Image 1: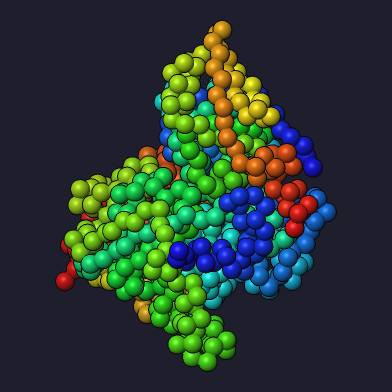
Image 2 (image 1 turned 180 degrees about the horizontal axis):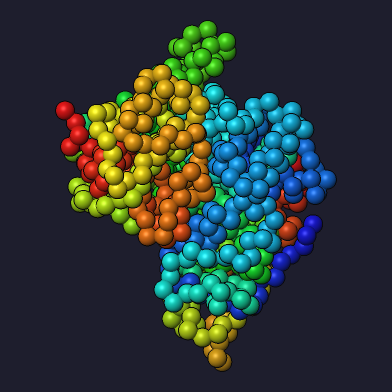
Amino acid sequence: MGKTAVEKIFDAHQIDNPFEDICVLRLDAVFCHEITTPVAINDLVSRGLDRVFDPGRIKAVIDHVSPAKDSKTALQGKILRDWARRHGISDFFDIGANGVCHALFPEKGFVRPGYVIIMGDSHTCTHGAFGAFAAGVGTTDLEVGILKGVCAFKYPKSMRIRISGELASGVYAKDVILSILGRIGVNGATNRVIAFEGPVVDAMSMEARMTLCNMAVEAGATSGICAPDRTTVDYLWPFIKDDYTSREQALAAFSAYLPDPDAEYEETLSMEVTDLEPQITYGYKPDNVRPVREMAGTPVDQVYIGSCTNGRIEDLRVAAAVLKGHRISKNVRGIVSPATPKVFSQALAEGLLQVFMEAGFCVTNPTCGACLGMSNGVLAEGEVCASTTNRNFYGRMGKGGMVHLMSPATAAATAIAGRITNSILYKG
Amino acid sequence: MSGMKNFDGKVLFLDRSDINTDEIIPAGYLTEIQKQALKPYLLEDLKLSGFDPRRDIDGKSVIVTRSNFGCGSSREHAPWALEVNGIHLVIAESFARIFRQNMFNCGMMAVELPKTDIDRLFFEFSTKPTTLETDLNTMHFRFRADGREAVFPFVISRFDRELVAAGGWVAYADAHY
């Protein structure tokens, strides 16, 4: 019987099978940020176990609240910073070099097909875009990962989502994943890995695949995963060019992690997206999804463009294309946070930041901040935010606030109108 | 080894599905690095009519709820906020994967019961002061309220039992890897 991609990755990484269905996996990388790691660090210190399994395989960033907003967040940063120094973790990204973890780490070439990666962050599933098994974990799993380089998982079950057709103008990966969430629900992929397949995925850039995989966890999935292909190799080539003689050779090596044609999936869904319209959330759960058209005209107080879902260069290009030549509504506060310094500097070089500023947006440094209501754009009670982020939970961006999730194009159009608006109105 | 936790006591019923970890402990409190500091904020943002965290949490040791409890963020602050309030056991129709693993990793329990059992618990017990006794050897829950009693068998994996016995995954992993 054939195997799924993630089954092959598990087989290649299993170091123990202590109980039926429980696989202890060797980790290729452990990613850390300043919110969930300090408690693990302090616990290791208090147990007399202040060690790391391999400083070269640990990557750390201060991203959630940066610059620090108060003494508590300054201390969280300091604990991570001191720890990285003390253990010789050279891939540590502090202010000036830091960015949203799930945008920064792929950009640095830290994610490779076939890798097993954990991080104390639920959106770690983003990295499945590279054909890796990447899972969000809690602080205890993170702590053991840091100390031992292992993590326990149940042997994975997969569901396959085949996406076919052609995306219409103004419709993006964000709309696809929102529509998937609307269809399968917030519990639709719990304890499973979602394998995203089909011509639409094949045609997507790595950025778009990351957007797709990023929200797999909103359906409860352990990870999303896309098959590595030429697009993956091209993205990674600057980092792997010394390891392979040619791109073809790299592709051949990565094909070890392609699913077999006769692999078994618990469920297979097919989606035809040619007629898909821009999508938006309306309630307090990410599966409360409907077409933007049905929400059109709803006033918003703030528009936020950024995050690990949609803060990459492509997202900024799309939003800037809608904004160019327009001013945002006087009733709206516009905030854009390029997800990494590289994205920031690309956006600067391409003139995108100028477009945002002329439209009336505030351009902030790279940080997670506003997405989870920690800094850089927290809502007041009763306020509404049009956001390119991934969660619309009650109070997510500020106590008593409402969040509508959407693509960067829809967010930009909404900023201009001051009301939820289909971006198609601002094209051509 | 920190030893086994207590899984008996008064029950808090939360009659809603998809309670997420932002509701269990809002992100604003993730700047705390001491678990004890989370104590006053448990379920502060829970959207559930009639529920008042300041009134309803005190003295409770067990939560009984519906499906997909603990979805959303991976924050272990959610189990910790339960732990520092003396709640070591959540019983639900289903859990989000990371939350469930975090509970056992902390030596606590997140136990699934069939929908029919959960329905019955809500129907027969949720309006009365209810207590639970957990028998880990025979794997049974015994609910009591107002002279009424109901016993439910439950299943957790051997791995989960080992984690509970070890007092969590750090102790287990340090002993084994």
